[in-house]
Image 1 (cartoon, each protein chain N blue to C red):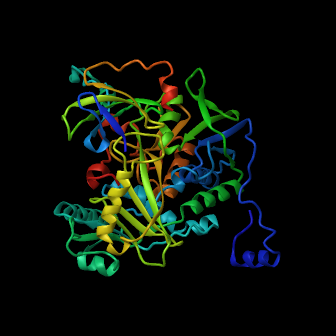
Image 2 (cartoon, rainbow over the protein chains, first blue to last red):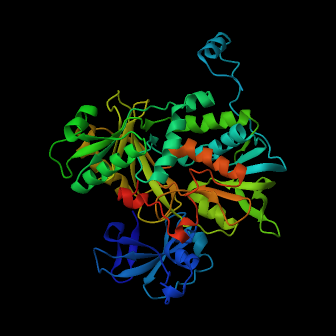
Image 3 (cartoon, rainbow over the protein chains, first blue to last red):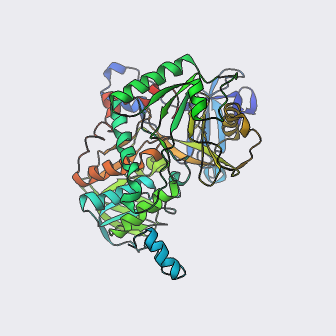
Length: 100
Length: 416
């Protein structure tokens, strides 16, 4: 089980949270302007990286707020967490190596 | 290839069993092949077997970063069934089930296919309605599936508790031709049969890149043992499909999740069939060694870690203890995880890709083992003829663009 640091409430057990999929996928501002390929990419295609993944979590049984997590999908190590709406933080140059 | 039979066993016994040959070679990679399959799991090896047997393409390499059958083929709970709702899925899984029925003879290798019956339990009104719909749809497709009342479930599988519990058993759908097989033997049998027809199975050979020519077509794969040339590459890499396809610049609608399984200490024969309960997440059967083989759920988040969280396994054991109270004192011996690649509609992709010469067989999610023979069979057709077999024609990548999903996720209402 993961220990996830909610940016608002601090470190809590994974059971308090729900997973919200890959982060930073913005809904297109003009959906009707998209062709089918672009719409399918928005709906279905995810980066699914073997490495650091930016993902949304919701502190369902806590403050109820969405926030973002950078997690290494090889080791499940959480690199950092940050409030929703903020851009993905740059990783320290050695961050990835430490995470593994 | 040495033929396996009662007579050969007797003959070898007289020689002190010193005359058995290795089941497959460990060849050095050649400079060029007609076809390279990435991934020596059940699906990849089956593909190589059918390429050689049915399409006469024997200059084939199966490259594998670890050891043969060491991924999800060796990690699953070996359940075989074909009672899927939609016509497309039913055709695909039934194709596989028909091949299972003759597989030991085809491969001259005992894959221990055991059609002991797969009983899927219903715990609420929604389950009852949904399973009855499955039963009717299956029978229209010529696939056996029948509805049992709770008492009939108990009669078919006496250890079940049909009394009061949090989610009582209201009935079940039984596919009598469903059952289990020995997962390792499936990989070994396909490997031996493919090797006998000249296929090179190259273990400890990790693909590190896919080389494409100026016209975009595939030229071969870069591996940890050097470049291997081939005009056709079939990717059958399960949870790592995204990683491999990324090397060719193709993004697929896949996410990889850890799926867990457990086995108990071995006990005498106590559990006669496979019982699945999608609603409370319990999947259980007894192996021929006597262990209870238990499938748990996936973690909520994507991962390549090959281990899942304890609360997922413990949730499944809660359900098992309610369903089969006599297992409450059974001790679990081992648990492990495998990485499964899941599509948005929970149906696989067996198709050509936008890259000429690159084919992909992926997205089997939590239930790929049952499809192994059928999947390899139609994937081999797709590679050999550069067009899909009519059975896998609906399972394209483009279905997500065109909105023609095969939505078994909605049909089952849970991961399956």
